Amino acid sequence: MAERAVLAYSGGLDTSVAVKWIKEKYGYDIVTFTVDIGNVANLDAIRQKALDVGAVDAVVADAKEQFINDYVFPSLKADAIYEGEYSLATAIGRPLIAQLLVKVARETGAVAVAHGCTGKGNDQVRLDVGIGTLGPDLRIIAPAREWGMTREELIRYADENCIPVPVTKKSPYSIDENLWGRSIETGVLEDPWTEPPADVYAWTCDPSDAPDAPEYIEVEFEKGIPVKLNGVAMGGVQIIEHLHSIAGQHGVGRVDHIENRLVGIKSREIYEAPAATVLLKAHSALQNLVLTKDQLRFKQLVASQYADLIYNGLWFGGLRRNLAAYVDDTQEYVTGSARLKLHKGNCSVVGRKSPYSLYDLSLATYDKGDAFDQADSPGFIRLWGLPVRLQARQQRGAIGAD
Image (cartoon, rainbow, N blue to C red; front, side, top):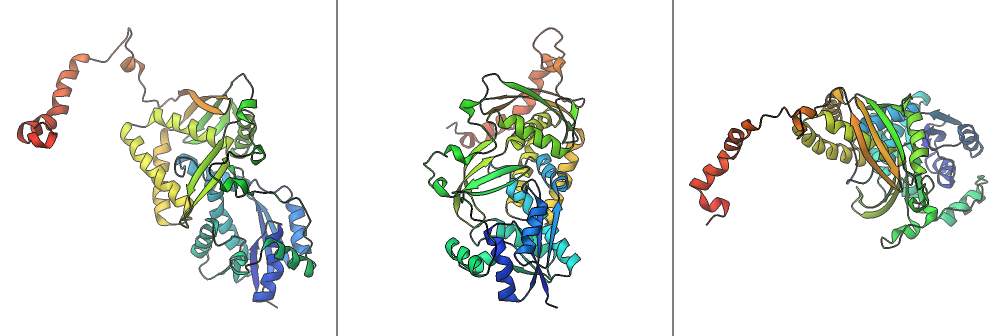
């Protein structure tokens, strides 16, 4: 009996060819694994296709709830946005896929794990590092990095080996999607001067075609986690699916970004993330209400580091766990609601409230009821400015007074 390898299987040309290619090159029997994190229309059909192309077994799993609760929501609590633009949809899905690939390898007795990533992108790093961390004894195979075949050669290989690959109109773009967002690249998008064509977008309408009337929505959080939408309690997957539909109808969630890849090159990326855009803004607005200035400023540093760790495939490292513990502590009082206005591609926070709010109207108001004692200000200012005045007296040149 031949040894086994588990192949991350999408059902497309590359991974269908990989079933036969890995068997020929390495002698492994192939167990395919397909996971739905909001990107698979029919798991049963994918499973049957894998068996048809030669897999000895085909494992499928619906992991949408796990994806949202164990990966997406921790990144939401951290305010993780790569380079201020990318909400990390594809990146945050990769550690879960790596984790499940290793799990299936253990359950099936496989000695190797394979995936379809190329040698030019970020995903090869994320999967290799994740698999290598959780299953260091497992061999990692990446056929697309090795075989050097063009698309035409892949199709010919499939024909010669009776691999049933349906002939479909090939998209001019490379697309990856899951519940948290949709990533689009290549084709005409590789010219950063070219405006993205209309056919790039699938989840969001053109903002100019969006309804003329704005729509207001309310998101309620408990300890940094969204739990209600417009007053209705929902699970995480439900909230995200509803927000995709609502915000997408208003053209919210489009991103056109020149991104610095982990492998050292710049790439032009188009993202659609209606739900992520809304939830990240809502979370930030509520968080600003309940954390102090110092907490917020330090958390911004943590958010940037957290996003880099996700993007760079280091989810399972000790630093990410350390930061997650800090983030969880900051979310203790991030409970309350944010109200947002969706209009013509824009998502604006127009209200926020929390039982733990640090906003005190009696201190903030300039009207009747002002409780701020302005007589305290002169003494505060004298103490605040003391270091500057002392330096000015002793070191005139240090403040540019000469």
